[in-house]
Length: 357
View 1 (cartoon, one colour):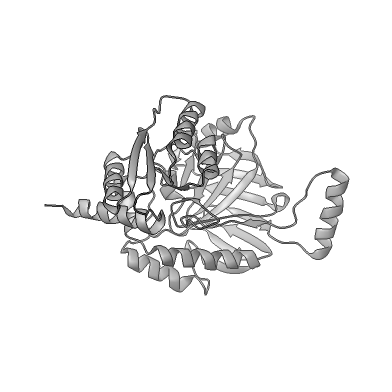
View 2 (cartoon, rainbow, N blue to C red):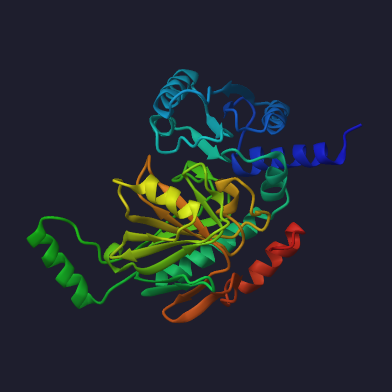
C-alpha cells in the first residue's frame, strides 16, 4: 500500500517532469546529485520519468572534490550523454559553470531545485498552482518595468532607493559621459525573466516563484538589513542577528554589526567585488524559512539582495518588505496590495493550503 507521503511525492514528481521540465517519452534525462541531495526524491523522480517512457540516468557527484573539478566531471558527462534534459538536485549549484554552458550549447532543457528536500519539493512543486504563479510573475514584472523609481523599506531598518529609468536629458548626458570615459553607463534598470518556466527562448530555469530585477547601478543607495537568511558563507544560513549593509552607488561600502554573522560576511567579502548584482522578490506560496537558499529566496513576499560575482556571490533575504514603485505601494510589510497582485496572491495561498508566515 502506498502511504500518503509517497503518493504526494509521486504526484509532485509528475507535476515537475511533465508540467515544468516538459519531459516526453524516449527523451534522455540526467539527474545529478551530491551529498546534500534527498535520495528518495531523486529516486522517485527517476522512477516517474521511466513511467512517462523517458530514459533517466542518475549521476552522483563527489562533494569532497573542488567545485572546478566537479564542474569539469559534470561537463564531460553532459557532453557525452546526448541528453534532452538535465535536472539539478545537487546542493551545489552549477548554473554559472561550464556544465550549464555545455547543456546550453547542446540544446538541453535544464532545471535546478538545488538541494531541495522531500518536504519542500512537495510543498513548492506539487502543491502550488504554477500557472497562477507564472501569471503573478508576469503582472509583477510589468509593474516593475513601468516604474521609474523603487523604494524598499522594512521595519528592521532597510531603506533602499534606486532608479529604474531616467529622463531623456539624463539618458543623453549618460551617453555622452560614457563616450568620454570610454565605458557604457546604463540609463535603465533590468527586469529579468521569472524563474520556473522553460520556454523556447529560456531553456534553463530554477524553481518557480521568483522575479529578479536591478536598478541603475550607480543610483542604488541606502541600507539593507538582512534578517532572514544569508548564504554563503556556509556558517551563516538562517539569521539570528540582522546584518546591516551600507550601500552607495551600487556598492557595499560597509557591514555593520558585532555579531558572528556580520563578522563572517565581512571576512567572506574581504578583497572581493562588492557590487549589488540583483534583487529578487519571492512568491512561491509553498516556500518556508528552511535551511536551503533555493527555498528561502522564494518565501512569499520576501526580498533578496545579491552581492558580488561568481564564485563569491552571496544572497541575503529580507523578511516582510514594503516596496514602492514611483511612490505607490505594491507590497506592504510582506503583503501584496497592488491591484494586479493582491487577488492573485490570495488565490495562490488558498490553493496551496499553506499559511504564509
